Length: 541
Image (cartoon, rainbow, N blue to C red; front, side, top):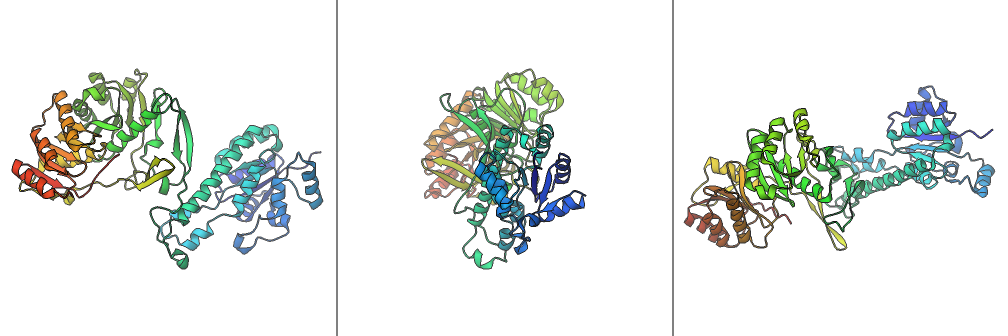
């Protein structure tokens, strides 16, 4: 008769563990457990052996020491295919452990709680749990290890079919991979937390510590969710990864990575990059239906309207040529009228991003086999809607910065010219400033009546961006007369201001801050236009 198989269960997250343990017992496995988990299983009427009975030592030091013992780690690490390992277990009376079910102290949840002290954070650093997980995962050829309640059901099905030692090798290896990724993320969270504490925090462990925005050592973990056909160009390989660290580091609801694809072929590298640019811009308009059309990471048309259909038509008219093959994003669920408006323009769209699609709209768009529909949730009310940190890879390193989440309000604007903007002009200035934030620098954007008219992006000279924006407007048959214009950074000379006024601008919004601000202000007064300073720059490289 083969020896009884043993399952060691010690979990902080008790979700589903009683039912799982009951099923394991029904399959003939001996249940071994610790502390609160053992009491929970016993209260459920299950026969459970406490780890202390196996080790001969009680749980010590407020539970800090309970599984760190050769009778536990020997049972996890022994290779069943090596006679000397099997003999050592027999010599020392150690029973093999065939299944380990562990999840760790909730460090992320504890440190995310308002008022968490350094002492509390330290007490939520698990020691025995990671040691057992790593031991079992190292010995995956002989031990199955679970850290996720979502794996209970499929693993149980395999145990019921094959027995504890009959869990397929591929399953055990997959579970081990998951464990090492999990423990790496866990250690990374601890590293990020501790290395971000301000100097002196260790001396006041009972107090809530001050945390710096950039940890001394930054640990990231990303999970590959799909391989892409190629990168920016066909000769480059590519894949998409999602953040797996907690919301404090990885962002939250409202980010593109949470998309659900409703229709269309697989996304490409450029599809994802451009869809993110479009989504980030459109979700910044919260109070009115908005549409953003993006091509090569730059908005080529942005508008607001009484409904999405109107916003789309206005945005498309900004630059119909560039809009071909672009990405379209909306900040409201797409209805049939909007889908019909898109059909009327005959615009070829690569990706359509929105927080939802009506049944009528989905039926209408279903005939476009190449159109990818992405549903992305809007940010939670009052919650963060951007990544906490932005990254730019450079040779041998990484540039890290806080996200450009600044949105300027009307009360922050400073009128610097003799002529003040009218209420209508002020509305256009705020609109065009919001758009300019998402245009590659140097950026010049003209707008009127909640619609972009001309966009000049990515030029080495701000004057050239102003001229290109005018050329784009003229090519689309749009007039810039009386328009509002935004410059993402200050005008270093009056020549840029003269160009936008020559093109028809009646009011200007810019950060200010140039050594020649007085010269530019004087030029605006001379030309009879209103100008406001934001005090905020929006470079986007």
